[in-house]
Length: 529
Image (cartoon, rainbow, N blue to C red; front, side, top):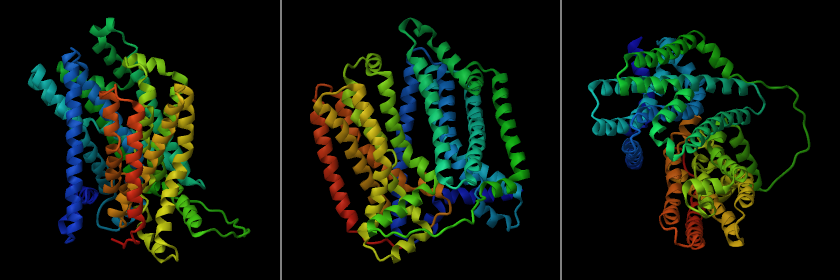
């Protein structure tokens, strides 16, 4: 069975990262796209390494080196849990590929373990990406013994197990709760967003507790933070005991608890995997269809309605693309109830909230527009759009309208509560509304342009398109690139007028948006590839 697990996991990994296709394709454009995407990933990896190293270096300089391992362990676990929830249900319990594999001469146990192994390997790469820079900085500055490096490596190997187990249970629960409901996509998205926002609230509560520490407590800061992390996530304390103090008992607790919980889930799923898959992927229908009055719409309106139905039919599509807009609205509401004075006093920058809030809203707006994978989501049904007697520009405009339809209610709530919270002047209030709107338009048009340039229509799982496609990553980076220059001006050069910064930003964004939109409208319907 070991050979079967290895082969199945290898196939899934090479397909996941697109390695197999690039190795055997003769399409130079696909190869160039793969190289370009590799460069982008390398850039992101270097940024993460730099951030983690700088973070660890700062804590060691402050004399709080003890919390570095446990803090990185807890944060990495939270990140793995957050992202695994979105894909655990659809990747591990995917029924269509299971039906294909189960007909082959492989055991059911090998299929189950290989799927978990695939997710484990991807999460392990993330774990080492975060933990390794902090370990190196700590080792260079503190010069610990060999047990530090040994337990750091072994502990990181066990790090993804517990978050992955919890995420699988939550993902399966969310999928099960929504599978037999009429609007299963909306229910799945709603439950997923509730869990995701719960994790955000937990991290905000933790941050709020940290901010309450005053200067007199700086000597005991490591102990205070350690207690807070330990109360929220005990495995982080066990990891710290092992790597910092060399306690074998800490490592045994970490390895034992993570291994036993993960192994228990594997054994349980091996026994009931087929029944769970069938139950999670079951649907229900009612034989009560009644003919009602028919109505007609313009081509654009009809396409817009079709796009909305397709959007809300996919829970993972809704939950991933709406969370940025949801965070925008939550930010405005939270700012209204918390007030700006406390935040500005903590940052020691009077007026910074009023000045930076439009950009913070813009950051939420560009996290992931619906258009970044709107074309790819058509998948193997793309031939339907190709044969419709409509203009191509109506197809592209309908996808843009869906993005604006989803974003607009959250945008209104965010701007309304933002104005009530900061009580800006007339011009500042205008920019608070104009700048986020410019970023919404820019991200929607840019996302469509990127997806038209690199569509993926031969996918088997929606997760591959929504979370793992090159189009999603490039669209997100394009949005962030539009935020970096004004952010630098706001925080690095406080003497510059905020209204001047926002005027230039809005003009440039709308100009780029107009150019991209005209370019999109000239593009014909793409062929399947």
